[in-house]
Length: 234
Ligand SMILES: Cc1cc2nc3c(=O)[nH]c(=O)nc-3n(C[C@H](O)[C@H](O)[C@H](O)COP(=O)(O)O)c2cc1C
Image (cartoon, rainbow, N blue to C red; front, top):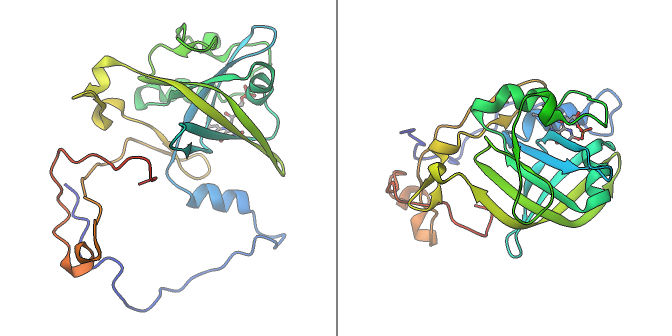
């Protein structure tokens, strides 16, 4: 159990800082953001092209975008095969990138020719999905079956929003009917070529009133049954 400590956020002098202005030509905001917006979950995005060719590629600019209805987002930095396929078919599957699949996840980020199916090239088995025509990665414990909600052009990138139609989870990854972090063992992306192994997990209840905060708060050892709160990004 990690001791998350009392007194975090207490006063004191600010440590010395270095400010990087994003309009400074000497500054590389991309490298700074990818090193500081961390750790990022990795969407292993499966798509199928208009010609029927499959495609699979990791995307760490990935998040839940809306709670109700359930919408996820990922960003294509540049115009890649994944984006082209989503535009063409309006479907994609987000497979969870897990620790035991790290080599395959990384290999599928290689610049394969558009007609090459990365899953086949890296020896992965695909199985049919339920609500979309894009197959899922058999060994990935979670697949989010998505239909295109909208595309948003942002400078050199395109934000892809997808309505989640179905969440498919390996039965072995469920504890009391809920996905278990210990079973999922998700990877994360950090800066440059750094990756994160599954995180150390601790439980800490959210304060339900001002009295629950700061020095009034109970020690941060919530019961093991505590679940992350839903639908408010916590
Ligand atoms: C862990 C990891 C995360 C990545 N995240 C992104 C991302 O968020 N957006 C992106 O455009 N490329 C990302 N990439 C690079 C793409 O996976 C890579 O460009 C890939 O070749 C794209 O494949 P595609 O052309 O078949 O779509 C990432 C690569 C790795 C290894």
